[in-house]
Picture 1 (cartoon, rainbow, N blue to C red):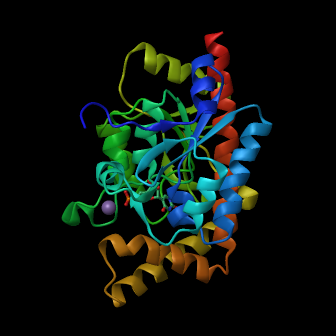
Picture 2: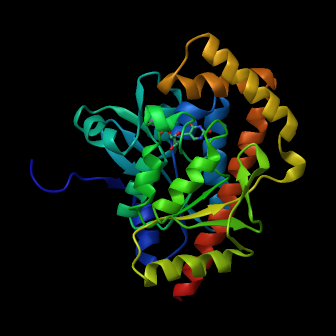
Length: 307
Ligand code: PSU
Ligand code: MN
C-alpha cells in the first residue's frame, strides 16, 4: 500500500469542519487508561452530550481495530472503554497500533495530531503530560511537549498531571515556543488544585479573547499549539495542603517499592485515589467537565470569528 494511511473521520465531523461549525476533539486515554470503570464510560459519553447540548459537535479520537478515528461512534467508545486488550497510544505508537490492527486510547499527543489532520481546531482534555521529576537524569518527559510544539491546535486543560515537575514543564513550554494563557487567572492551575503556585504571563478573560489569540497564532503561521489553562473552581478543588502531604507519602511509597518509569503514573494516581477515598476522582471529573465546557465556548467563538 502506498500513499497516506487513511484516518477515519466521521461524516458528522467532516460536515461540521467543512461548514466551519464548532467542533471539539476529546482524547480517549482519559477513558481507556485514566478513569476506572464504569465511570470512565459515563464521563466520556456525558462530555459528548454536553457539547451537543451547547451546539458543538464532539469528536472523540481513538484507534479502533487499527483505524485512527476522529469521531468514534458511541458503540466504539463503549467497546474501547470496556476492552482489556488495548494500548495507550502516543504519537509514535500510531503506526504500530494501526499496522497491527489493535485498539488504542490516544494520548494528548496522538489526539492533537489526529484532530489537526481532521481540521479540528480545539481539543479539551484533563491534564497534559510534561516533565517528570528526575527527568534531567531519566529523560522522562512526555511526547505531548514536542508534539504540541509542532501541532497548531488549541488545548484546554487544567494544567499538567499533578505528579509532574510543573516548574520544569513550564520552562519546556517556553523553550518550545508554546504559548500558555490562563483562563481568568495568571496562576498556573495544578489539576486537582486551582493554583499550582507557578505564575504565567498572560490571561484571557473570555472565549472570544482566547479565539483572538488562536487567530493571531494562525495569522503568524506559527506551528505551535495554544494552551489554555483552565483552573478547577476553588470550592471543588482538593485541599492544597492535603495534596502536598499526600504526594509526599505517595512518592515515598513508590520509592520504597522500587516503582519507577512508566509504572509511576498509574501507581501514584491509584495511590491518590485510594488515599482520598475517591474524592480525587470526583475532582478529576469536575476538572474535565470544566475543560469540555470551555473548549465548546472557544470553538463557538472561533467559528463566529470566521463569519
Ligand atoms: N492526565 C492524567 N492521567 C493520564 C493522562 C493525563 O491525569 O493518564 C494521559 C494523557 O493522555 C497524556 C498522557 O497525554 O497521559 C501522557 O502520558 P506520557 O507521560 O506517558 O506521555
Ligand atoms: Mn514518559
